[in-house]
Amino acid sequence: MTTTPAVRRASPRSRRKATPPDPAKPLLPATEPVRLLDPTGTPLPAPADYPEPPVEALVEMYRRMVVGRRFDVQATALTKQGRLAVYPSSRGQEACQVGAVLALREDDWVFPTYRESMALVSRGIDPVEVLTLLRGDWHCGYDPAARRTAPQCTPLATQCVHAAGLAYGEAYQGRDTVALAFIGDGATSEGDFHEGVNFAAVFKAPVVYFVQNNKYAISVPLSRQTAAPSLAYKGVGYGVPSEQVDGNDPVAVLAVLTRAVQHARSGKGPFLIEAHTYRMEPHTNADDATRYRDGAEVEAWRDRDPVARLETYLRARGALDDAGVAAVAEEAEAYAADLRTRMNAQPTVDPMSLFEHVYAEPTPQLVEQRELVRAELAAAQDEEGER
Image 1 (cartoon, rainbow, N blue to C red):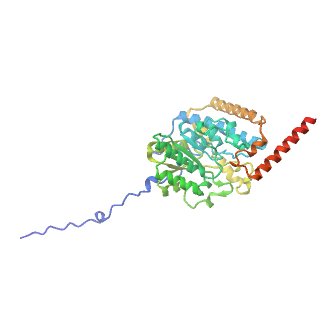
Image 2 (cartoon, rainbow, N blue to C red):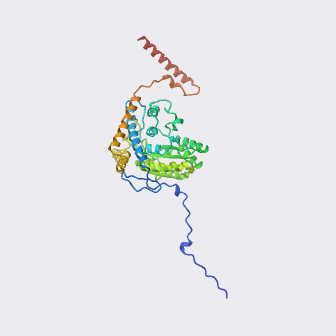
Image 3 (cartoon, rainbow, N blue to C red):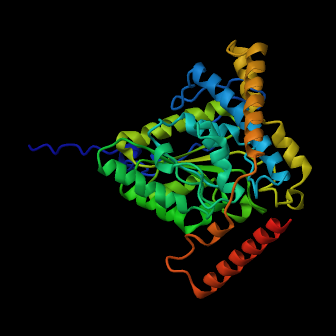
C-alpha cells in the first residue's frame, strides 16, 4: 500500500512575499532635523550616526563664531558709512558658516555664495580681501587658487556646477579633495542646482551641497519655493544621501558636516545637507525686511541664537568660563578695529579701468564713453593746475 505524503500547508506568514528593501531608505534624511543641543544649550542624546565632536573643536568653533559675528556687524556698519556698495549679512547663521569651514581640510575647496563672507574670514582669508568685491572692485580680492576658495557667487546656484566639475577633476587625478558648495533655499529652484547634483551623483564627485535654509529668498518665503517636506529630500531623486540639521545648533551642524565630508572623501559620492536656520538681518542693506516678515518671527528666532547656545553648553562642560568669554570678545573687537581702520583708508582707483576687460575688442560705444571720461579727467586736471 502506497502512502501519499501529507501536503504541508503553508502558514499565512510563510505565504507572504518577503518585502524587498527600500532602495531610497539609505538616502532619506531624518524626519526631524538632527539636533544635539536644545535651544537653551542643554545637550540631547546624540544619534549613533552623529557622535558629538571633540570639545576642543567646539571651543574653536565658538571663538570663530564670535569673531565672525563681530566682523559681520562691522561690515554692516561700513555699508552704512558708504565704504561698501552692498553687504549681505549672515548674522544668525554663524553655526553654518563656521561649521562648514571647520569640517574641511585646508586643501579642500569652498564654493561660496555672496552671503558667505563670514565663512571666508573664518577660513583665514584677509577680511579686506573678502570685502573687496562688495566694495565695487572688478576682481574678488583674494587668489582663489591659493586660498582653495572660489570667488563669491552672485548668480544663483552656478557654483553647484563648478563644485561638481572641480571635485570630479580632483578625484579623476587621484586626489581625495572635497568640494563644499554653499547654497541658499531659493537657489534650489534653479536649474544649475539640479544639474550640479545630478552630475555629481552620476560621476560620484566628492561634493557636499550645503543648503542654508534661512526661510526667505529675499522676500519669497520657503512655501513658494517647494512643496517637499524638506529641501533635503531633493537629493533622493538623484540618488544622493541627504540629511537635515538644526542650523542653529553648532554641535549638530559640525557633527553632520563632518560625516558628510567623510562620506564624500571616502569615494561614496556627493552628500546633500539642509540646515534650518534664519537670516536675522535684511537680505542686504538695500532690502526692507519688515515688508515681508513680522517682528514676532524675528524675535522667536533670536531665542535660538547659535552663539549663546554654544556658550551655554561649553560653560556647563567646564570648557569655557568668564575669562575665556572675555578673551574671545577682546579678540573680536581688535579684529573689527583693524578692519575698520584699513577699510577707512580711501582706495586709489583709476577711472579709466572702468573700460578694461569689458570686451576683447572695445565696441564703438565703449570707445566713445572712454574718450569722454578721458577728456573730463584731463579738464579736471587742467583746472586743478590753474588754482
